[in-house]
Image 1 (tube, rainbow, N blue to C red):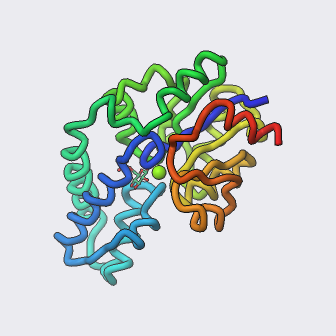
Image 2: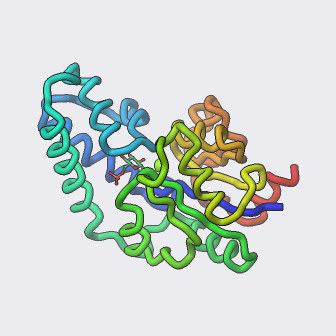
Amino acid sequence: KLQAVLFDLDGVIMDTAEFHYIAWKRLAEELGIAIDREFNENLKGISRMESLDTILRHGGKADDYSAEEKRDMAERKNSHYVSLLDRLKPADVYPGIRELLLALREAGIPAVVASASKNAPQILRALELSELFRFVVPPDSVPRGKPAPDLFLRGAEEVGAAPEFCIGIEDAQSGITAIKAAGMTAVGIGSEAMLKAVGADVVLPDTRRLSLEFLRGLLSA
Ligand code: BG6
Ligand code: MG
């Protein structure tokens, strides 16, 4: 029954969600804007430019900069972020993820990455995971980012899977909303209250208990 599993990257495959937070916090401080972890939940899953706009609005500076200045700021954040990726190594993959990907490959079930991040291919290479994914959805290949379903629908389509037989795995509220809007089963990783509130079918505190058997069980229930 299970036809494909679609993975978010940051915060699901490894701890890069934390790196994004550190890099945004640094940029925000340079702009004189304070952000904390609670506010950071709003930045998860959305694109680089949307995140920047959200931070500027939060700081009451939405209209203070030209498009070119904003491009420069987004690039500066990305340099902060990319410098944190320097030490990335295969052992940084979250527990259970590589095993799950190997089991999916064994079972002939495609694994797909549906992430907003333009850095995804580079991160997958550093983690030595590239060949375990059938497809990485290019974020610019769809009109809308999360919480719209586009990235997940595009991924399913590419591997010939019907959404009702797909499972999406996400750590962000925007991502869970996107998976549900795509008509798929949503597995949340993180806070049960936060992710159930936007429709996650099941929430696990971390990736340890993710397995092919667990995922298959969700579709046969
Ligand atoms: C998402 C992250 O996966 O990718 C966001 O959750 C991030 O925090 C977005 O802003 C875009 O990433 P990048 O690497 O293209 O700046
Ligand atoms: Mg994420």
